[in-house]
Amino acid sequence: MSNLSKVPWSVWTARVKFEDSPEVKNRPVVVLKNDDNLCICSVLPITSKHKDKCDGYLISNLECVNLRKVSTVKLQYFEIEHDKLIKFLGMLDPADIYNLKISLQSGCYGSNFL
Image (tube, rainbow, N blue to C red; front, side, top):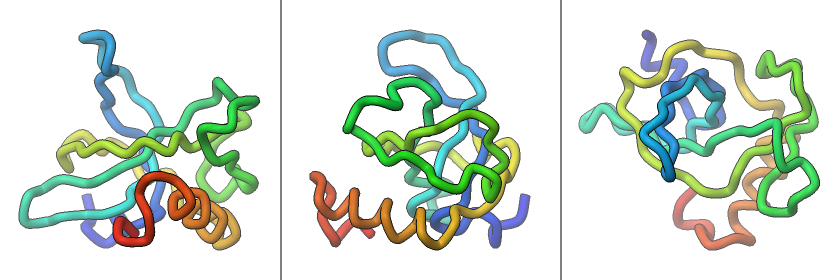
C-alpha cells in the first residue's frame, strides 16, 4: 500500500471495530492525518445512515470516492493502524474538503487538529 495514497482527505475502506460491540466490519473512512512513524492514521468514519442528523458532513460528490449511497462523514475521529486500511477509494472533492474543514473547525477540534 502506497504511503502517498494515505494522504489527508483520502477515502478508504477500513476494518473498523464498533465502540459498543466487539464486531468488526469493513467501513469507509476519511484520513485526516497520517503518522508513518507510529503506523497509524487519524480517520473519520463515513455512514449511509443518519443522513438527517446534523452531527456530520454530507458528502456532495460521491463519485470522487466511489460511494453509491448518500453518505455522511461523522465528526468524531479515531485512530487506526495502517494495516486496517484495506482499499483506497479516492480523494474527496475540493469543495467537500473545504466544507468538511469548516465543519471540523466549528466543532470541538478547532483549527489545531487540521
